[in-house]
Length: 422
Ligand code: NIG
Ligand code: FE
Image (cartoon, rainbow, N blue to C red):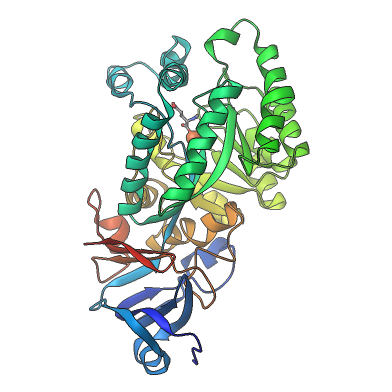
């Protein structure tokens, strides 16, 4: 395999090189195909992968640039950088008090309706200066990166006023410019009805449609719009109005749908040709069918069921069997899933949703890339793709869901640079 460009990074002696070369997205049984190369090697020039194959072939053909960094993987596993397609990383403080209330028997919705939940995070964020928000969010990104995540979708949604939503999206923009992780911004002004609009929710929806969405689109602050479509938050008709305005403004659509009850959120997302519908614990059969037909991806968040001490997980097997694009994510947020560990989510997906290790890996690489429309650049290790690469302290990729609750990342390469080196 001739490599004309000179390699600035060479990774050799990879025991299992998970390239993910193959169909995009991975549907049904294809999710078990990792494009695996035993005894692999990868060469990188600058930010780009220039050779992938057997270690000897890559080494034999690559011309090394002066000062080329050579990493001997010594038989370890290498995968593409993981992609987390649903996070809420910009918030002021954690909500461990609610976690304790939940284990003592209060439900997520009861806490929310009593003024806690998202609304308490909104009060908190509004009172927190941007520098502090930035600093705290940066720590969360550091933890995500340390767990092998190189790209995230990042939502606003704890501001819920034009000013504080824009401030949040500006924090996301600043993080994207300054942090190794790439962030794909989503506007989530429809996360909740804030305190000052509790008695006039229609006015809040009008504000979203007439002021907030146009401002976000004008300033180019988001690629997607999301809505918490759920009983007690935004109903189907409200969600449709908000998302139609977002679509008209040129934003892609994502939905929080059927998380706590079945409301027809998946059907709505599919009918609007949304990029994703997320959560889907209570998705209906009709919703699954509609998503398979429209190509709307399911982003499943088993960390949320786990952290809400629930017992019901999204019907992942059914969705895979019916040809829905399935991705997995942390849902990193202060309320329902406070974690930056995507590998831990793979463990939950295996144990609770019966995904194989390979299906889980497909869900956080190639399929997750599809949900943020970046599958030509990330999610696979192929010539011409961005060099986002993770080396793991393991010799078999199946250790990823099996060896849980610890961090087995040994090195992370982002755009060709070694950003984590343990
Ligand atoms: O994805 N469901 C809505 N949004 C988040 C929770 C946000 C919060 O409680 O702060 C979720 O679960
Ligand atoms: Fe969420």
